[in-house]
Image (cartoon, rainbow, N blue to C red; front, side, top):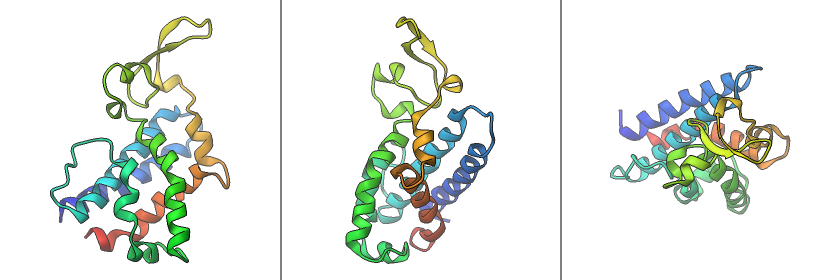
Length: 175
């Protein structure tokens, strides 16, 4: 098994756990989103590694550039898009949501911003209801991204469907 294929298989497993956690009412959103972030990152790394086995897979910021290796006619056809123009429009439309998913990981933000930015893993310093500073907990936070991911005809739901489609159909390219 190649490194790319191993990352791809783990991404598929992480995505299944994301779907399971998202379907469980009452669980803190951070847990499902953590699995979504990990699945998306591993999927992106698998795609980059398939094209370049020397790719530095240890870095976290990879989703923002995922459109680059996917912008291929064979991938467009494999994913079932009618035209390259439609496919490129989809890729461009997904970039803001993929960026939001990527920034759920605190390691993406450098320096002090990681301590003051909402993320799915670690508490951060933020404002409480009285405008004072306090430490906020991911398990208690309502992430706006969850509503976006579930909204019909929204880029968030399209992103989830696209990630699922990549996991379903890209295996021949990754292997």
